[in-house]
Image (cartoon, rainbow, N blue to C red; front, side, top):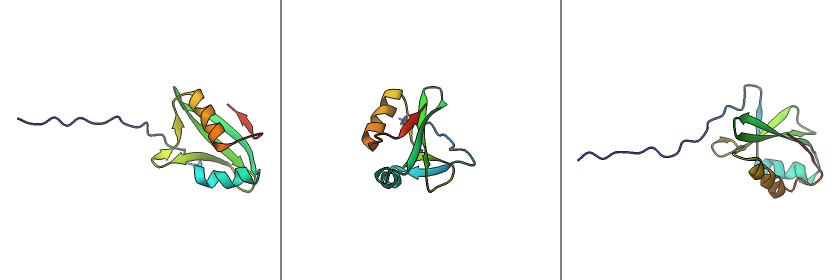
Length: 96
């Protein structure tokens, strides 16, 4: 009898954009400590899918928060808010 191979859940593959730059969460910790993160932008990149972009004082442009498999995405605004608490954003300006 032939076995049926099931595919696991697929991740939503989002392109960060041709001009977008990526920044890992570990790389974002130091600018937060030095209070160099000017602004965090939570944006909806697909219906029901959100991601962060950061503006850092000594880097030009927006920097998308990335994970192991590409841009870090969140399925709800609640999870996005929890990530802000984890990053200890504090008084950093955050807009959606």
